[in-house]
Length: 518
Image 1: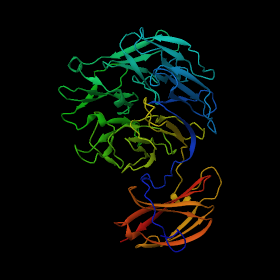
Image 2: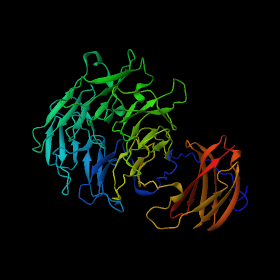
Image 3: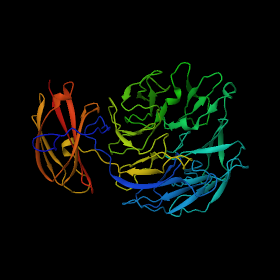
Image 4: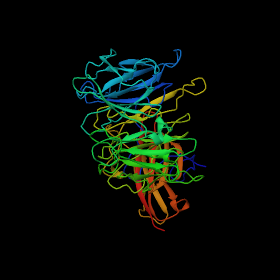
């Protein structure tokens, strides 16, 4: 095997990566924030812009491994350019999943809400830390919950929940007997108004699985719908319900799928609008028992449509997905899908979605759940949402490595692949020209490297499926090589040549479309 140079190409290791169907999409590899430590699941809390600097702020909950028992801390970070490495302060929590954010006093700032004390203590109460320029670690007031059930998980960490469509958030909790509580307030703060969803008598013996809950406006009416998964083991008959938001907090308007008619209803999740029609989308399982576990998108309707419409390339064993926002600035919501024990997959939305494939973000430890991922907003103030992903974490910190939380910079899509440059740096990018194009097989690849480093070439088909990869260490200079793509390209069509140069200080990328005619 020889070096990638004027005359030859080295066959290298496989890189299991995907690109978006929109071939003009750039990779999202610019790391702008990282913090490490052993974190618990659901640890990212979107706070919005608290201090008026046009950068969104955020919190990351962290388990305190030095404390006895279950204790955690929620670290508050101000956004910025660069994003500060050091948190401004932290708020101690009983459990990192018992703290959330909600604009409870309706002043335009998200407030921090913390379950007060140990979950089983009564009366149940919540500390409220009012958001704004003066947010601090001292509770401003206490909410006493109207019920004494076992309240635990607090929702609304990433996207506001507005069940009644009045433009203001609700604060949502649940009990293990699957009572849901929608707590509201006004500018006067007290007293707190609340609405409770109690189980139907016929379903009182079902158990609510909080890690399968999702919120989004699936029917586009401006009211947040929510979808719990309810499990019954004896006799087995699981339920996936879709409760449609309404102005009077009635919970009688719902649609459900059961396991006796729908395969794996637990693996159906609502995500935010991706095609710009105002309706949320569904991630739906489209396989069969013992199959290859593929997933697809189904576009939001009322009642929900679970018929697969757009295949998702990276399947895995779980349909969990979250909506990070618009991370490429094209006006369409995007998607992070969790692939258990493997990675997160990033999918870009668009006006026409004909197939979804993705860049995969890998971890060096097993990803067992959707840990840390969530919406952080625009933390560096460039007008584009950024991407938060994280590694696995566990309460068993003796056997599982520490987890890290990463935030990658959102990146605008260039007008065309050929115009792709290193964004906002002014540095010279890789120059690539491929001829003939279209080709019947053999092509000459001419490229100029502005710096020395590790050069990788990945080739994808138009659906984003990886078909070829090579990499080698190269010096700064001008190169030409010949490649016969008929050796690995099966059919005629468009193929994407993606070049990546790792210099140690920066990463340069360039993508070119090549048409093969057989």
